[in-house]
Length: 84
Image (cartoon, rainbow, N blue to C red; front, top):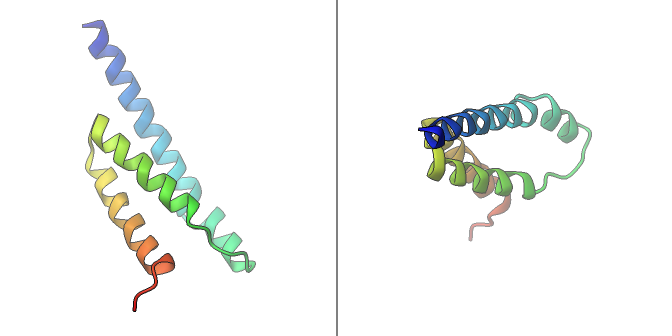
């Protein structure tokens, strides 16, 4: 019983943290301002967020993770994968 309560709290906290990261990095606030000033876009953030969302999806589930995983894969393919 106690384990279930703790897991529910951890799941809620993980979702909260993911939502905050998404708001900070993908609502046009930070990312858009940096790119407008001419800085290069790095592959690090989308790769780390992709892995984080995959881990969260495995442990706590959620369709929100699926949605963002698809977006990050598309972003990586569009910006960093060279097609022949």
